[in-house]
Picture (tube, rainbow, N blue to C red):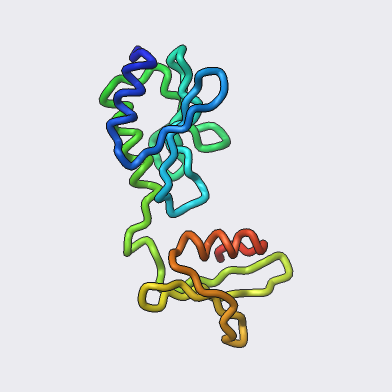
Length: 151
């Protein structure tokens, strides 16, 4: 089993992750460029060696309800692999992002999210502009805050 310090060194070798110290000596690592609501790639890495990595969008891992995998007994290679895969799974690529999406709320009202040039626009059913956003993530967060979900 890797020590806390060894796990820290491996995880800190990923420059895209930002360290966040939390209570009881535990450490989280955020991926601030995530295309999704999930920012924690590493959750509650504890000085006793216990900790979790987000694998909710990955297959082949035994995850809990929150999509987390316990990494207590992971080898160096296993830890590097799952952290890299977790980051990749949260990174939006051009093929991942659709040029147009339909979002719906509980009242069956729909909005269209459309990529136009380098902006993301939200339109109502009657094609009125509801909002303009610089990134897909900003638009997605707005829609989710307003009670909409992707169809």
